[in-house]
Image (cartoon, rainbow, N blue to C red; front, top):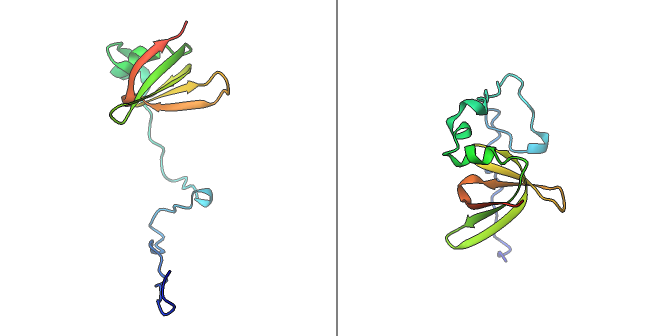
Length: 117
């Protein structure tokens, strides 16, 4: 591919700087001095307690078997179904019935939610 006399420089794209984050995740050391962010109680956030928000309405459906239609791009619908386990600020968690796997979906891609009874 390259001519025999072509020399490829040997350089590291990331300098060996101890202040830079370590992106080698399996061997990444945990710094116990960094405080974890405080998570606000969901009940105090209006998006979770008010049913006029999608998160608040979906919180009442936790435990129900649902089918959620996600809009991917501009014209592709993808439907996922399972038991609704959790609702976050910008995500939902479904548990598939066949495999017990968890599916985490983007809340802002949801177009339709059907509760299967």
